[in-house]
Image (tube, rainbow, N blue to C red):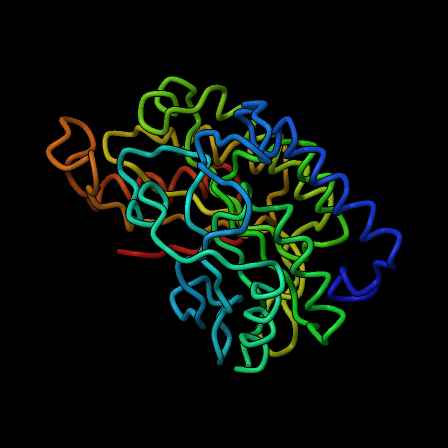
Length: 302
């Protein structure tokens, strides 16, 4: 197989994928909300319409080590989000949509700029609602010499149709697995059926790219990286998430169990979310992952 995978797509395949992405957005089913708005004239929860809004483009050295390498992960942060997490640590970007609008051509040039700086990959952060723009930009960039892996860095609430469309384009999937309980997903991120949709999405991602493959230089080439943010008071139900990964995905899944939670946005002074996690809570999460049989754990943020 050719890596990055998008280099093997011919003109007809690109055309098919781009046209299909427009269809998915015309009565929008790009994410698990399936809100059905016509993105040409309406906006849904994500507020996306027309050109993509980008808040920043830069090498990032705070991502997982297999993405960062020596020269950083080339991150493109998209404004807006299909989730509404009340504890969002990037709410100025995700909720307030700070940033600037870029044409697809401008977006492609930003990808090439990151590559020229030596970044090991193009890391698309919160990309789900901008998939039609992203596909066109990757095609343009590939025609102009882009040849590093594409990382799809998502909140994990992606529709089956969108993921099928990305098959053969994305090299590395990096989804969040935020919740094991639907109740808390609805209460704290305002999304229905999050575990059902998220678990199915991650399973499809793994079907496409498999377990994480790391090259001789220590940099990821292809595969799945899962992120799980430990929440205070057990609200993420880490045990259920880890058991699903181990039993339904792969015990060799690269999982980052993150301790970075801090109360932000509407979670400040919240009765359950208004504090950082304790060392005991984090240790319990790591033990749940190990007990499930997961063998590639990253412990970050403590």
